[in-house]
Image 1 (cartoon, rainbow, N blue to C red):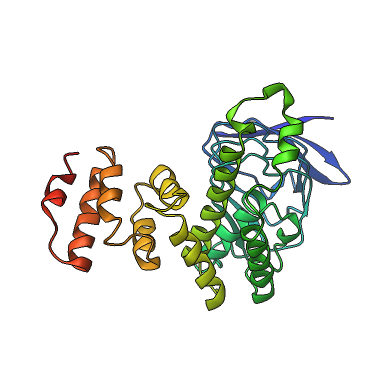
Image 2: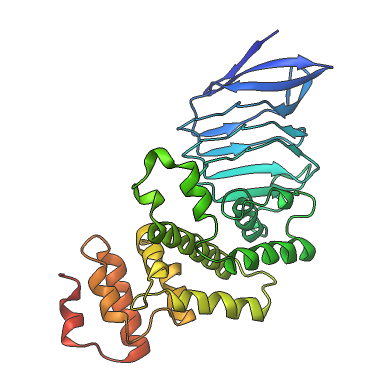
Length: 307
């Protein structure tokens, strides 16, 4: 029998099996969905199949320490979902739990009986764990008990290197065969396909360099070189394109470009010119950085904020 639960802006349908509640469909209006630990004395142990499917409103989800199962497609197509907080315990994950959750940035793992215990200290792990389900496509790394350990990070890096070393055109033939009805579209264009592959590699390199806990120097070197080889002024400019289009208002990405050598005196003016009027604040920040690093600017610099 399907039952209803509601408390202020939190609401969902659920069913009871063997004395435990399974959340079937989220009905709440809040931006942050908070799943209760129990209902009428019964523990909430499962998030059912497609429970949050295609929810366009929820940005955060807080799951209680009683959760032991998250079923197939539970959060699929939640286009606004940014963070999910889960207990550090063995949880059975179904297929495609976070499929097409393009904004998912953090899977925060908290210690049981202390929701705040890992908050902050686990921020880097949270970002790497979120990437497992979307950027790495490595469900075997969705292990909440092992996440953040040296062994887990080593396996994460191994998957990263595998992706980085995969030829950009690999998989294109399969895409072409599966999309015959769209023959001629940009998705079936080899150059576009390869550029998207490089963008994916850039996103991973940026993420790992900014979340560099236990990052071996040899892998840091590989990631740094990849960014430098695909920055502004190179044959392929995906490093700069990703930073400008996806992280254009975040200073830490520009700082990383400077630190890695992907932004240099040689390509600085071209970068400034390419930023346009929309990123005026960041252009001012970069002009200051340029003067600090390379000395007084040129006449072009004085005009760049107005371009």
